[in-house]
Image (tube, rainbow, N blue to C red):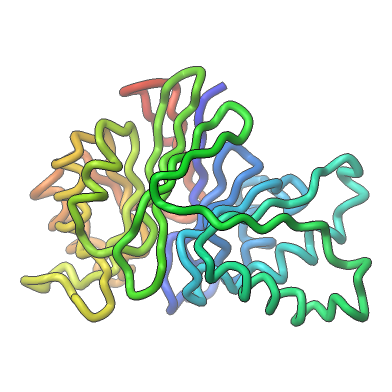
Length: 265
């Protein structure tokens, strides 16, 4: 089976009608981050909440976690469509515990326990690895104003690999973490016209993302979390550094059949 990633959303904190904050579907049952309305938005990829068994959080800024209460509620409402579904597993930094607790409070879990699926929360740390089915997931550090992670997914059968940067400023550790991966999905929220990185927000410009791709010798760079109004400038700046760059769009998919065999669907 190929490693597949779907772009549920590619936006930031200011999304418009029909848009979604940056979040991803991996191999049909794994989410990476949960945008504002992920339970509905994932259905553009023909995925539904009861199919989700694992959620990996890069960090706990609002645009990456606000969809969690809705996801939990929607998954449980559809439980009859998949009665043998396992408990949902949530992975992320230590900030994930209060986010999960707040989600349960919003859903009034004490009054309506029947609407909450069973959850397992696990904190993951840079340097750690875990396995989900045929995938090995390596955990790396992202450089952001709060505790943040990046993730590398490797198909243990085909050896195809995918790195998701999360929100991060440029740092050499990410270059090493992404080394020789087939697809690097990297944020590009920084101003493409700026001459330097924004060290206050610790986001990457497109040219910073391209530096990571070039330094790591990745095959394909897909940009997300970019200012939509500046899409042309974002792509131009990145391509000057790393030519095999694309702007990802909501609803797109990529399939990785093996090393060097990535295709947009």
